[in-house]
Amino acid sequence: MSSLVVDRVAAPAASPAPGRAPRRRPDDVLARVDGLRVAVNGGRDEVLHGIDLEVHRGEAVGIVGESGSGKTLACRSLLGILPHGAVRTGGSLAFDGLDLGALREKDWHGIRGTRISAVFQDPASYLNPSIRIGRQLDEVFRVRLGRSRRDARVASVAALDRLGLVDPDRVYLQYPFELSGGMLQRVLLAIALAGEPELLIADEATTALDVTVQAEVLDLLASLRETTGLTIILVSHDLAVVSQVCDHVYVLRQGLVVEHGPTETVLREPAHEYTRSLLESHARYGIERLHGPGPSGASR
Amino acid sequence: MSAPLLDVRGVDVSLGRLSKRTRILHGVDLGIAAGEIVGLIGETGSGKTTLARAILGLVPVESGSIRLDGQDTTSLRRGARRALRRRGTVQYVFQDPLRSLDPDRTVSESVAEALDVRREPRAAIRAAVAEALELVDLPAALATRHPGQLSGGQRQRVAIARAMVASPRLLICDEPVSALDASSRVRILELLQRLRDERGLAILLITHDLGTLAGLADAVAVLYRGRVVEHGGTTRVLTAPAHPYTRLLVSSVPTIDGTGATAEERRALRAALEQDTPTDRKEHAHVH
Image (tube, rainbow over all chains, first blue to last red; front, side, top):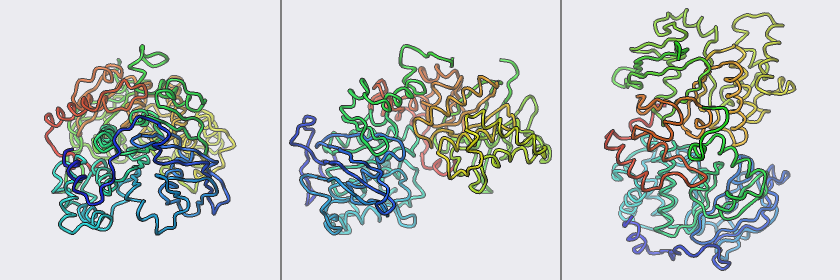
């Protein structure tokens, strides 16, 4: 992790490392979504019905919901990359005082991938299968950060190293198909973090991974947060994943935020029926049942 | 436990040709009694699916035996094996029903498939299909729909109905709920439990998610790099895991109540496992 600190100091355009501010002060909001409405099918069918989200600096915010609840569309709105046919029909998006909704496409270049980055579920589909890992990572440093070829290579290997890839020099020369899913997700994280973003959006980033690899990636996110003050939005269908990482959680259902609050509060006193059902499913078919007062019910 | 329904002994399986030939399973033992739910857990590439395919006779077994109801299926000739499959003692449910169901067939056509093969009379097929749909709680109105018009949970019910119509004694479910949302996931697990309770069905539940097993499986076998490294009652395996891999696995499951392991504990377990098996993870990345 020490390489990261060095890298930050040496970087020409180092963003101010925010550090861990006390949670939820009104003046340290990094991103805010107000009454966001998004419609698909060319704007005919509304799927996000006015959602509010608030992300404070240094926080890890979880968005939990099933497929179709709108969690991915909410994140994509923040990245300015709504899928074809989807349009924002209402509400506003603010990032560090900037009105994201008013940005033109060319204005996004200084934000997407540099100040707000993202990793998604299927890492392999975001890499070019016929280009070595190193070259794809170099490109990020060269194009986004204007590094020279040689500097980019040094930065790439350092980035792979800091994300816990064993033998980064070898990985640098490998092709995507030679790496496992967990390694690929680390490469994608390295790419996402190359621009030293203030906000990282991880949308089901660990869903396709084995549980042990998922734990590694979640641990990695937690440690990056501690060492760099990275702000994280973690999107997952799995309440346990969110509760392991996040301070604050939003529960989405059918395009609406049905509940939100500090993670412990939401888990301890779920207000909405849907959140309760998620918790019950864990109590019933979840490893937690073995930690509790003892297994009950039909199974032995 | 009396003579198990499924008795896998010392099974070796290698896949690939010539120089690319790789040993996938190393001396695997596994027993499942009638009415028992056994969880088979392991990471991607550990050999879970290959073991399932071996049980179904879809991949050749190099050595060892697989006995189903006392009959060794590994020595069967092709015709006898096909007859065994047709009898339908073992049925298979895949992870992604959208891919395992024919998109051009209606629900009832898909479910009838297994019976069509056995050339049963039409009226009997219709009755059996209706019964199977009822068994999995699918409304009869959905029988004429196509897979694309169903939700993920409904599609998985169709896949289970299609398996159940052949009256299997052993159901192999390969990641049956990992593609589903939390609410459908619970309902499918409840359904599997009910099928076991009501029909004495034995279930081999293949998953990488320990949570799925905690409330459902009687026993758990842990497959790691082609070997069963641990096998025992679910509660014992999940609360007092013996093998370093199982320990890492258990400590990696995210928990809602914060009772799980810490990052430091996981790091130590990972290191212990590396020492135990000093091979690169990569070489296992390609085989599923």
